[in-house]
Image 1 (cartoon, rainbow, N blue to C red):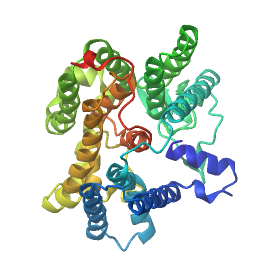
Image 2 (tube, rainbow, N blue to C red):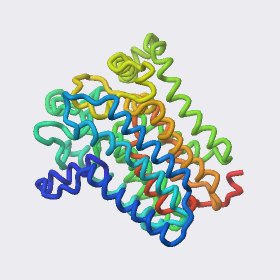
Image 3 (tube, rainbow, N blue to C red):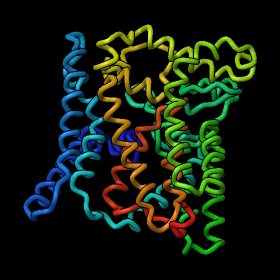
Image 4 (cartoon, rainbow, N blue to C red):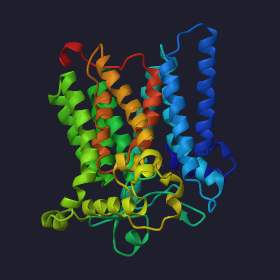
Length: 402
């Protein structure tokens, strides 16, 4: 369930179940994982102390980011809760990496639950697209809790005007916050289906049809490109070194785009054919001028995630590297990207049975992050997989990777 999905359940419940709030879920997870750590210690299990130290360093960097950027114009809670609920999962992931010598959750139960959820959300998304009816709550106290679910001729919005007055389309989004998030669930579901060799062919075809249809109905171009990339990797990339190279190359592209966006913005062909892409470049420029990347801003960031709701702008930060640095600075970003990369590349090295389409889905993450910010989806998924897998599940022999 996504953060906005929790919000939708909270609204549907009449806000009676306050534990559905994202920050409370994070705190419950933290307490559970802390209890796991204590139990492991009591049973004499080995602990990777380096991960605990890195988790402490990351927690300290978040505290410094909050302290350096503290503003008396905003409530303390509004400056603490967003940064913890957004980046606290990294701390949980590091603790799990420190204690998880053996899987804690049943991997088949995890995989099957993710597949069922993805298919269920896809069916809901298909109904939403066809009927142009959101079905689930999309507003709370007069404010939208979803992102740009309406689409019209290359332009996106969360304003119903696009649908009712100018004949736009309603993106499939299920109980998530956007077509992008549902698109990520459909990609994950497709990857799981490709990995499940035990499924009958007819069932595979049915599931892939549902997931693929919902993916198309999200009308999210980066998801379309990610699907193509996933298929290319699945068919042609069979060496570990190539997979690692592709992953690292996309991270480099995230960084490079910030530096070349000003040049690309002046290309006439792009201005004519890809105006929405150029609007992303305008967003880079807007936020870099609003929150200058001076020495302090680069090192500690600006806690932008806490102040963003107060900023009135048509622009968003659609680049993962820039978004994270503006939030928590370079030190936080290096721990953030290092933790994720160590986890994913470690699974590539440990793939003792075969290559996995689900693992390739994780490798696609930095590609999506070039022009979007998908870590909100991937980090909880990495945490869940870390709790379920000793090594990454796979569907063919390791020789196919070499």
